[in-house]
Length: 164
Length: 157
Image (cartoon, chains in turn purple, cyan):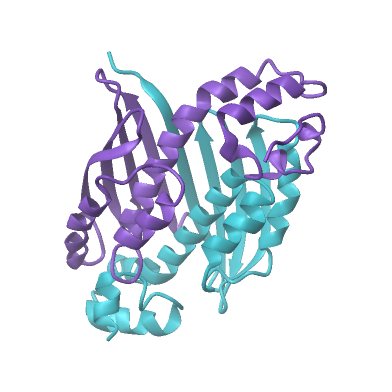
């Protein structure tokens, strides 16, 4: 059997010399191809600039969505940013495919800053590693309750006193 | 030299073993996680009939428990309102956000194929239908397509 459809989506993050981040997200599938590139200021995580290109689409009118990207300039990457991007770029009056690529860039930024802390956890003895888990949650408080591993009843948190 | 500080790759391939079945295979690989998914969706109601996932690389001894939470998606219709939000909660927050992410990637691919796959087949047979007529038919048969974006909202009015 041959494939009826294929999709490749890849995203990369590079630290620039001035300390800001350059993130690119590209989607290429059987029917659509687009790239979004954004710069994010560090440490305030403000979206400083963005550009995008739709190189292949079913409808030529899809190009009209490109200017919508400028609506996210100035947003701070933090609580509520995903909803704001979906509202500003996606939805029935926007382009959900471009919004999705912007959201992919946001994920990249978050994971880029989470990665060093996850590297640190590789030395944690999870069976008795309350201090290591505490330190990880202190650096990444949003992980608490974000998945089954960091649910409040998770065995990983059994020795961790959760502060309100 | 600038080096990457993070990168993620996702690949989704979809087969159609019969005219009512989509089989998606997804792979996610990034600096931290590696995982794979198989998702089956059946027409006419775009229902998820099976999901299977495997971990290739994860971070905590609790992560494998997220595999069982994939079954929360079975029985859902990928065209239903708030589908993505629901998956992020019952597969992501209750399980693993990376599995939820890849599952949504697979389901979005299935929706793309449902909307445009027939056009590709027609092109391959050297038949070029009128775009507007093609879309009008798809607006009727693919739930949610009509209002899915600025272009289709305008065309669907």
